[in-house]
Image 1 (cartoon, one colour):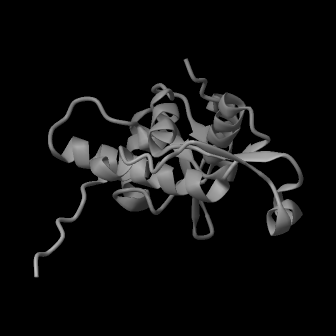
Image 2 (image 1 turned 60 degrees about the vertical axis):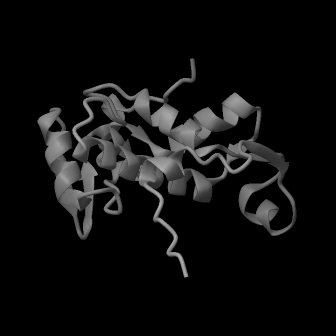
Length: 161
């Protein structure tokens, strides 16, 4: 029996799976999201938005969702898939960096809501903290969480070209 070759993170990132897709909010979703429509963006779209955040600036997954919703004329962007695709983009960037590529998505500049570092990104909190501090940000610990101090001051909502 032939073993299936494991796909690279970059291969996962480029697999659009017939996305983006805009759907009507129905059923149980409306209890959480209200009324209107939601978009499931393509992984590459999430990556493209993450790439827009320049050195010294930060964004949050919520701001990325707002950008994607606006791009597709939807009420909201799906929080689950946007988070998963950001995670895939982060790992694809780390993979590219590990292979010596000079340009890759600055995933450490994408924070969770409230300015929290995402411990599921490559290298965990230590890697993110080192990269953020190298760009002039201050990372503080609150309980088990790590946050960028005064992140709102340098937070931007990325735009699509």
